[in-house]
Image (tube, rainbow, N blue to C red; front, top):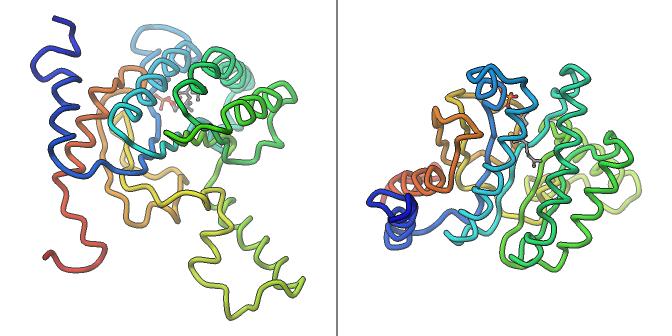
Length: 254
Ligand code: FPP
């Protein structure tokens, strides 16, 4: 019997979560621990990021199997630009490698890919790669995969404020209409519902400037598993835990 098919394996967890209740429509993930994974094996950090690519594939396929509609991954923060130049370079190369390897399969699976963040800071070749994957997957209707790259949530909110100010100055928006919906409409995430579930790997319990606005009512799930070791089985465990939570959105339980 395959590992996935063994008792307590991925297949059984998938059956259980299908019977158990509603699957989160939108899952967001802070993929953390690549560096520690590499360090633990006396490998250079870029090899940890490379191993993290396999986990990205796992989590995309897990979301497709479970029926998650939106998956938002924190792949590179604005703060990550402060890392050593060779690590930044290897992360950018990895992005291009990921796109070259996965674009055809993602398109066939019905995945539509979007890049959220300040993409004008990317190298010309990385920009070409992200334009390619967004263009070639634009018809996907099964799963929206959002890759946050050169992304910072405070910068995203400041950008929304700037865009709103421009609309007000141009007479297109009445200041009285600047409400929560107006802000949400000017965030990168405007087309999608807020995440229901946030997963962070490697045991760290912080938001790290990720989707500060959008995570207002998300359920948090922190796992000690390092990102390169994260499999669809871990995703299904997180979804089962989500299904046990009592989401009250500030109200009382019924
Ligand atoms: C955090 O681990 C992870 C990152 C900064 C990069 C995430 C990138 C990937 C998973 C690579 C593949 C993804 C795509 C979409 C191409 P860390 O380096 O902060 O780990 P540490 O805290 O253990 O040092």
